[in-house]
Picture 1 (cartoon, one colour):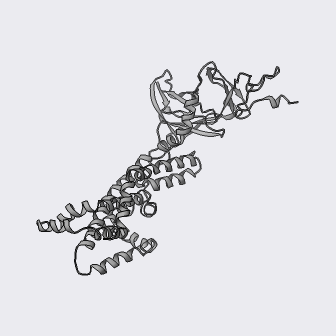
Picture 2 (cartoon, helix red, strand yellow):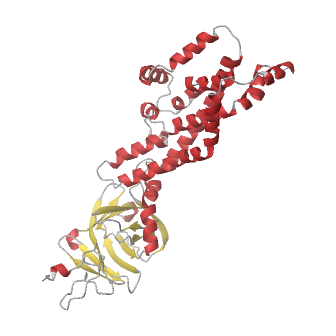
Picture 3 (cartoon, helix red, strand yellow):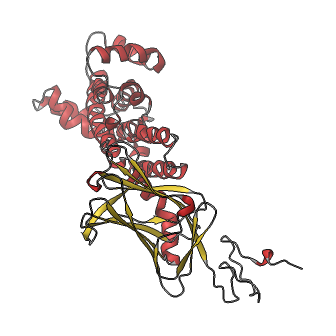
Length: 430
């Protein structure tokens, strides 16, 4: 025989139970599948711009004083309030209450609410009224998982543009009847999410948090800036040097080419410290110059690749251009570059991948987070998310990493023809 306690249905159970004649719990489920959920509310705090904190509600008093509209009721527990609701008769439950602060509301910075979701993926939003004006959260909070958490709604966000955005902005939303200098009205609204909306929220939530909580587009802009400059520098310098090694006759060419190949045999760790000292003496530390200026001095591997490609190409067009009066630079621009286009595509792909995924150079030369590229910005986000008081998680980091992979995947699908063609032609001996 099951006891009455065993007939209670938890919030994570979806199996309908037959009604019991003596069962009066709000969690009871009938045979029609009616289920009541519960959202737990804890402390409510208000902070001023000069770091003054008012505890508007304590956990043991969180169930008192609220005006409730909609199919819900507040039940007092030991140190929290439990909002029991059922969206069968209405799609919104509203809780509103007025408070008095000890500081003038001109200096109000944020409000913070502790709550425990019920994993229903319904939407929680907040409205704030003060000094004759109304403010509403710019986006809702989805009730995901069952863990206690703290949500912050900011009216005056921090000035740092690179800190993790663990708050939701309060935007002006009209006028209000609340006009006292210390009177504050807070409205908590719980909106029903349809099945489709809940599914879409589960898929998109981490991506939305990634785009909102970190300066993602600033990191992307820096990475694109570095990619463009590195591509321009690598394509120009490597093709120009390869043309000199493959087509021109000048004293010491073989020795210089052997020295170029010798640079490929040096580990990066050998040149790391001398290169850093040079950049520091030039005043380029904590700037983007060390991340792109070196590309204009060529790369040993790319020069070798283009040189081998040019050595196997025909000389007829070059000789014809020379007979027509073209100099070395015009031959390079009008004859050599069109011939070497497949190999240039290979160099461009390799340069893009190396620049987009570069981690060591930003780690060594950059100290200002506003200059971080995307690869290093995600690492900084991971470090900040491990600090106490932040709500960022591994899901946001994985979403950011997947967004970072999209350009690489696009390059593979759209440029694989040039890549394969370049690799094939560079392996043909003339």
